[in-house]
Amino acid sequence: MKSILLIAVMCCGIVTTSVSQKIKLVSGSLDFLKTEQSFNVRFTYENMLVGKLSEEEYVKKKVEQSNEKEAGKGDAWHKAWISDREERFQPKFIELYNKYASEKGKPVIDNNSDAEYTLLLNTYYTEPGFNVGVVRHSAEVSIKGVFVNKNQENIAVVTIVKASAKDFWGTDFETGYRLQETYAVAGRGLAKFIIKQVK
Image (tube, rainbow, N blue to C red):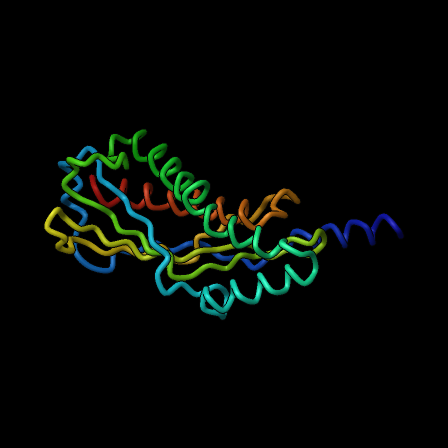
């Protein structure tokens, strides 16, 4: 009987909302990528919602709650919340995008100053998720991407909705790690989408 209960608890621990990212070409065409070897990318987080809160509201609440538990803990969390973008999320997106795009001979991200096009990626929604052992909820991000040329003219718009890395089997206790893996999923997904679109 104890074994059955243990198995049931373990199963509960890995159950999470099942969502799959959806990538869509909202406007324009990606045909211009047929003649390109690379493009630039810029990441922004403007007007981002975190769960049901604005980022400002979420950060304020999180910092206050964490500092109440332990002095300075909230401030340290806030520092990581910002630094993880350049140190973890963005590199992971680029790494996974380039891995899949290069395998198929499609243009890669290398931020070459001579590149004709730049992809502006704005994360407009973040769900940090949580993992407390027997109960967890996956992190996810939604991103709008706008390809622009050197004249800053819009060429194409894509959306990446609900990018989520779900099954970590107890290894995703840290918020930064959970979100890092969602960007990996988003990068890989965009590469596969472009591979299909640009033949």
